[in-house]
Length: 509
Image 1 (cartoon, helix red, strand yellow):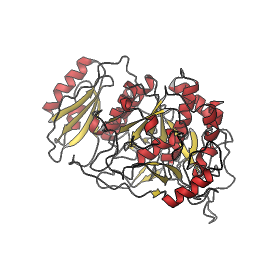
Image 2 (spheres, rainbow, N blue to C red; image 1 turned 45 degrees about the vertical axis):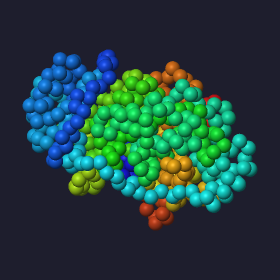
Image 3 (cartoon, rainbow, N blue to C red; image 1 turned 120 degrees about the horizontal axis):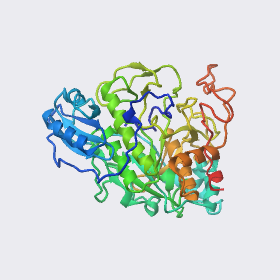
Image 4 (cartoon, rainbow, N blue to C red; image 1 turned 120 degrees about the vertical axis):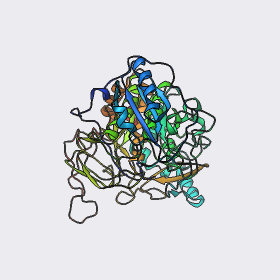
């Protein structure tokens, strides 16, 4: 699953001058009934594609647009009336173009470039699992520290942000839930089960929330990404395995991956944001980018519709009190540069190399308004070699691991992040995928301390408690005499670390 932040790619926080249409900046004035699934079954005849049709918010317009869908060769899958987003399947190649001509439609486009296919499984890639022999060695070292979890000696990341000390002061409130929008979470893991919230979990694949028992879990053990992320946020301090940054808060799972190819399609993410908002989730973690486009360019009508639909959903959640955090990406790209080469999009068919301006083509959901963008650091508090960056883009930094240049003095001497894996296992991963949940855990501690804080206020608090980290004098990681990245900005705010590296201890104090 190359779109996962632990594997690759980008991020940023929306610039004020972002040239979006008026429809991208609205917030619904009132919540309506829960979304309705108009079609229980849909004939998936190749080359059928999924689409989002974004309309004005009044019900008369929405109903009128829905009536136009069949005439254009489409079938309504679900309607999110509260944000004016209709998910449609159609095999008509002109469907989006025809719908854009309908009165009340503000944008419409395909959410993928490959036809809908039957479900299957895919290999997400290998992780480094902790062996029994390694675990015994780590447990022996951990025993030297009172009140330490058995594998905590390998968790350099907790100590780097004071999370081990913070847990003794305030481990977080049971009234705060962080939803992991990801590949699913194995809630049967002994480190996750004590803090898991099934009532706030679902599977949103295809755009319709499935809340049946276990629907939120990973499809296979290879879909471990979400379980790892969940453990980083809220693994319980229960004398088993590892600890999370906020071991007292609750964590939920919203699985948004396609079971056939593991991608995160827009309609699934729209469903996730709306579901989180309507089920009282305070914080979401987003360690991915919405497929199939790494960047969605506003001059392309399909990509523009994707930005519109997902933005409506995340803004709706913000209005209902949900703060979103997202990873900055693993390309070591300067997201405030004039041009970036994207050679991976679309990732559901045949990628075509293109040069984009990151100020006009947007990584979703990371670059959407109000989303906190997180870059990654290693044990030396230096930007991880892979982490993307950008002045005015990155909001805060957090431990994401660095296996090449920042090796900790821990029992395993592994520069990556140790956390939970499906089937009761533990493993190491690195990436901005791992940085974002560390920041989400700190945000959860802040929300626990300031329960009435709005998403905007919570973001201000998150930046205020961060440890200001100045740009390094040199960033020649491989020693070849060439700077591997250029940090712009001062001590208090810069392109590598934003407002600084999050600090759990300062958050609870």
